[in-house]
Amino acid sequence: MRQVVLDTETTGLEVELQHRVIEIGCVELVNRRITGRVFHRYLNPERDIDAGAQEVHGITREQLLSEPKFQDVAADFIEFVRDAELIIHNAPFDVAFLNAELRRLEDATLKIDALCRVLDTLSLARQMHPGQRNNLDALCKRYSVDNTHREYHGALLDARILAEVYLAMTGGQAALTLGAHSEGGPGHENRAPSSQRGERRRIAVVKANEAELTAHAHALALLDKASGGKTVWRKL
Image (cartoon, rainbow, N blue to C red; front, top):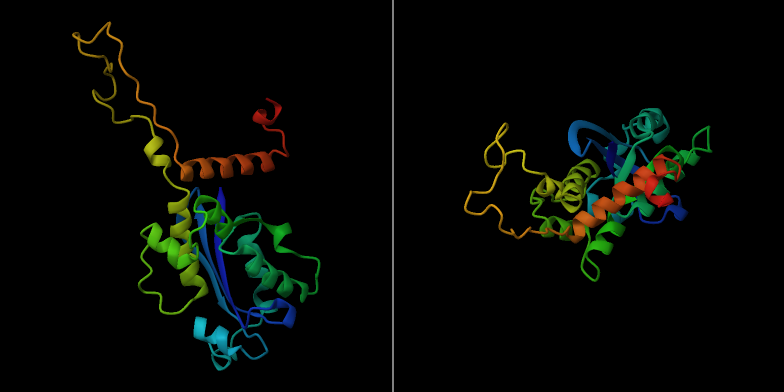
């Protein structure tokens, strides 16, 4: 399974006011492992940056004057994310801005939703932790992800942090692995001592926690979508 953790920085908050993307950061996951492959570009927005936005990411328009425009990197970006599942925190915001950039291309019919599947980790966090703060900083604290080096928001830095948060949020599978290193090892029977044979032994039942159930439901949804709704459990 290939996933791409994505974040953007923009000139402002309102895509309807023609605000633009100024930075794209992507981190690749394959089978829930960070591969080291990234996509990172700064972009010339051809417009001013709102003061409030600049306070968040620290990027000035002057710094971007020599950077490429979105249309110059669009092909590389599309190639990097195509057919992956995008992992985005507050996905509607980033998707709206990226779709607005795609509409400015010659092929104005392209949309992120058509290129990729999208998972919103903010929505996922709200389901897992209702009534709590679920911004990226709060999740870092909750899942013990180090973000002390984060003075400003940056697309690639935030994508890397989100990758670790996402894996922590949806982790726990390792605890369910059956005893490959069980007592006795390969080639030995795991039999009870002779004094216990014939006695009824209590079997421990370990129930999945909320994070594991959420990760399981997400995996089932991906399988169901990939099969066109032909999964066996639907028939049952």
